[in-house]
Image (cartoon, rainbow, N blue to C red; front, side, top):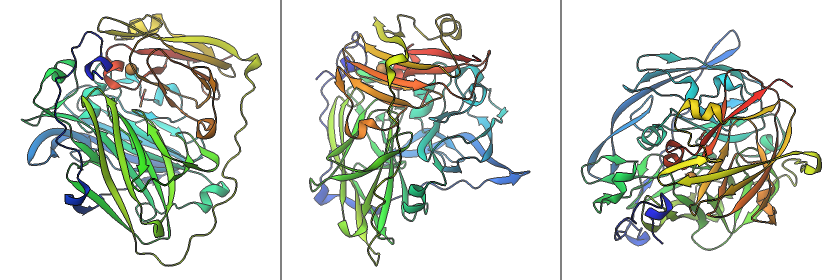
Length: 474
Ligand code: C2O
Ligand code: CU
C-alpha cells in the first residue's frame, strides 16, 4: 500500500521505511500509565469556569530528542475537562501560541458561535470565553484547535485534550466514573517527527526517508514502553480517543479475546457489546469496560496511516489487578436508542472530492471562509435529514459533522448493525465508498455563525475538505 497515496494522489509514496518502532513486548520497559490532570473549575454564580492557556513548550515525543510542542496549561496535550449534562460552563481560553487559533469542542452540541470553528479565530494574546449549557447524554468528547489551514500543525504539536460529559442516567450511576481511578482516559496519537525533533504535518515532510513515527499514549512515547495500570477497583472503564492526524488505530486484546464496548462517540450503546476489536479513525472515540481480574494487555494496531508508510502493533497497556471483590453485573440496558425512520427525511448528497492537491466537499475547496460560505449547506432547526456521504476519491476519509449526533444507516449499501447502531459524530468513509447517515438539527440556530462538516484527517481539512453548515431558525 502506498502510504503517500492515502494522503494525496499526486504525492509519491513515502519511501519504504523500516518500522523500527514495532513493539517487542518481551523487551519493552514497563512504566505506569500517565493520566492527564483533571481540570478544576472555579464556580461563579453557578457557572463553572475552566481556564485553558494555550502555550508552546518542548517535549520528548521522540525518546532522547527535544521537540517544539504545544499544549493547554502544559507543553503537550491538555487536562481532561469533565462536565455534567445541564451544567453552565465557561471556557476562558488564552492564546499564547504566537499564531491565530480556535478551540473546538469536538462532538459538543452547542450554539455555533461557541463551537470554535475557524470563523471565531482569536489572535495571540487574546482570551476567548465561550459560555454554554452542557446539553447532551454522557459521552467522551475532545477539544482541539480548528483554525483555518493550521489545524494539522496545531493538533500534531499537541493541542488536544479530552472532554468528558457525565449525566444522571442509570447507566452512568452503574458504570465506573472515578476519574483516574476506574475511569481512565486513553489518548492515542501517531506523529511524524524528523531526526531533529520537528513534528511534521504537511505534505513535504512525508517525502523524507528520515522521519520517525512515534506512537504516544497520553502524551508519552510508547515505542519501547508498555504502560501498566494497577487497578484498585474491580472494574475499569477506558475511554479511547484517536487524536492522530490521519492514522487508523485498532484496539484489541493481546490474548485474542473480546472487548466489552459500552459507548460510541456520542452516547452509550443500548447494551454492553462484545467486539473483537475497535477501529478508531482520526477524531473518533469509544469506551469499554474491563474487569481488573482479566489482567488484560491491550494492543493498538496502526493501519493504513499515511503518516507511517506502513503499519505497526503496540502492546501499549497492561492492566494488573490490585483490587478486591468482584464487580456487580453490568446493567442489562445502558441506553435507549430510537433508530430513525428516514422515509420522510430530507435527502442530500455530500461528495468528498479531490482535484490534484485540492481536497473538497461537493467540488468546493474549503480553504477560505468565503468559499465555504458560498457553498454552505443550509438547513433549519427541526430539519430531519439523510445524507449520503459519497467518497469520490480513492483515499480514506474520516467524516465529521459538528452540532448534532448522527446515526449510521448504511455503509456502502450494507445496513448498520452491532455497535454501528450507536450515536456517532465521526465516521470512516473508505476510498470510493459511501456512508449514509441521518440526523436531526435541534435547539440552536444562528444567521451568522456556522458549524462545519469536514474530513478529520487534519491535512485534508486544511487542504479544503471542509464545508460550512448553517442552521437557521425554521
Ligand atoms: Cu474534531 Cu471540526 O473537528
Ligand atoms: Cu480526508
